[in-house]
Image (cartoon, rainbow, N blue to C red; front, side, top):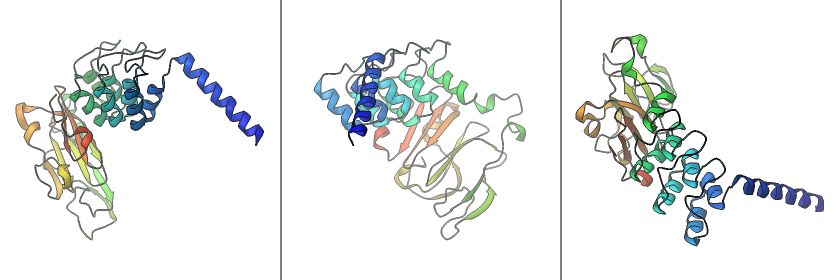
Length: 281
């Protein structure tokens, strides 16, 4: 027992020494772990500078965004964390970091808190939007192939439990454990990207349009109601104005998010962290 306690104490001592050498503060550690309660406690105590940097120039907000913790991100922004600061190594802002990891819920919170998709530029001269496109691909319609050429895009296949209508193939209710089959997008469209969650599916089509299907509880489908939709249906409203095309989508249990080609970020559903982050922002 004494040996175990000594070993544990040594490890803790090494970890503490490393944290000191790297400039890591308790607030940074709490933000990295997504410990919202500890973040609030540390901020209320006034002992930690919310914009303090470690040896790489990272702040607590950057670390929370990197790990994709929207609640911690919101707490830090509410404490006036600077959303425009950039790290030393890559010149990444908090929004760069959230988008690099495709943490769109955290990104939406940052946008609602004052971050923008067009600035600042990182050390490669990329805005947050340009980094997103560089990492996950250019907009699908920018392909040299024709707008409806099958080789440019493709079909989506689903299988599994169809009880929630999220498979996009018109099977519901008692139709469980469905074999592999093609999702039915309106012809002549093909799929360019897809995001799924437990109860719904989002698809970007070959024209940059957004479609959704599944259970509509909480408004997660974006159709202005809570009805079940068994086949992919185009999301109208905000995304239909001005001919905006969607470049990236993400789906969580109760929330959906999308980014358009102009950097507008949209969210809908029942997730409290992004309830007011409906774009473009």
